[in-house]
Image (cartoon, rainbow, N blue to C red; front, top):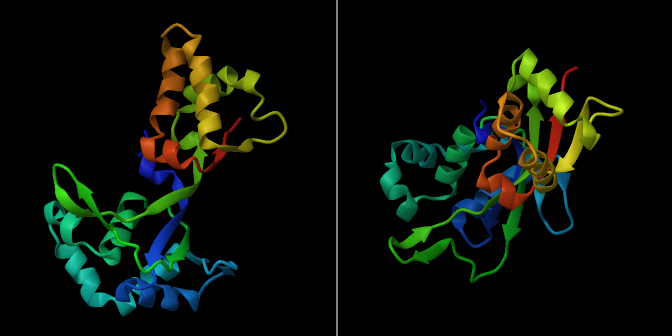
Length: 210
């Protein structure tokens, strides 16, 4: 079964205008942006962003690779978090970079048990789910048959739908079924979506194969 992190292919990250590393990273990425919005946010490819990190933040990248995970929550910077994201979400193709210009903005949050920690803010914007990568041929036929009443693939072998709407429809169908092999196929599908995807509610490209 696919790791939920492998579903994401577009994310939105927030950089801080008054942080040196963040501001420098934003300005470097801006040179290669494929899209620029009126609010200052930009879109760059994952390949460009990784190339910028490796070329212009070599020391920070090396430090991030050597940093123990158990201390990262207290001393990590943007470079560390981005590198971790690209490992945990290897299918990211595009990154929207938003710039927070609030002088009072801080990544430091207080947690009762751990004290002050650093939180990196990002959102999953788009996911792609290709059913042939999840199911074998028989399971795929079963899945297509089960969701036929939902009308997902009436005209095309794919559909674009919000994650929460998709999950609600499949969960509602599963709730009416006795637990058997057919129900297990639906359960396997639902297990691909973790809490991060549910909370961000990205657009999902769901692709089947007849």
